[in-house]
Amino acid sequence: MIPTQLYLISPLEVGGDFPQRLERALAAGARRHGDLVTAFQFRVKGVDSHEAARLAAPLQEICAAHDVAFIVNDSIALAKRLKADGVHLGQEDGSPRDARAALGHQAQIGVTCHASKHLAMEAGEAGADYVAFGAFFPSHTKDKGEAARPTPELIAWWVRLFEIPCVAIGGITPDNCRPLVEAGADFLAVSHAVWGGDEVAAIEAFARVLRPEPHGKGDSAADPG
Image 1 (cartoon, rainbow, N blue to C red):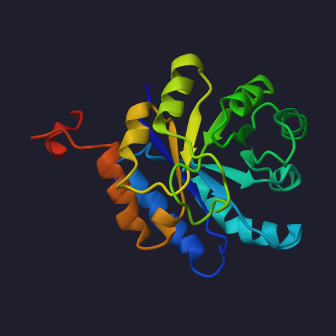
Image 2 (image 1 turned 120 degrees about the horizontal axis):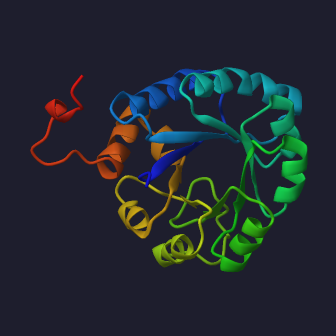
Image 3 (image 1 turned 90 degrees about the vertical axis):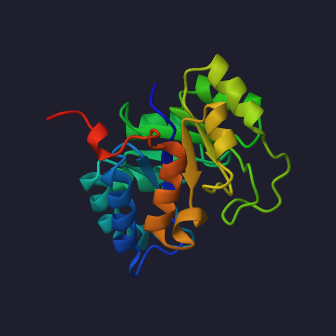
């Protein structure tokens, strides 16, 4: 069983020095914990598809170099244009069946399910590769007016009954994520906790929770060459 992994979500501003920040974050995740970061979601608002493609290009290259899936938020059309690894759909962004038809069998398709067991089961039946529950905590990126807030028990219920992976999202930090990990979340989707400060320090802080070093063991515990 693969331990909980990180799913990074971009800030809305991904120009300027952001490609360098993404490179540093992914390198930090790979340094001692090669499987820590598994996906990156490209999330921009209010730009046309040409500008989105321009902004995405260097980020997509960085993700490919680190074997991290490049997922487009909301737009099946943009995901197809970019030949992205997948798309993440909100409840108003089309169905997993539509995405599968447009993007092919290899695409990773995720669906936002808020705090709803019903929406998650519908997404699974429609062919989603993962479901996302949240926001678990007050969030800088999720809608402030979101009604029901899920609990770790929802994740525990899901992983007990279904094989489709689940993502926990919304205000997750190294300090509050442990109950979600213990409930069995396959992925933690994080944005502000990483990009709101020093991204390398943030990745290391998550690593200490998700990949704790065994007591009394250091580098010498690595497999012999």
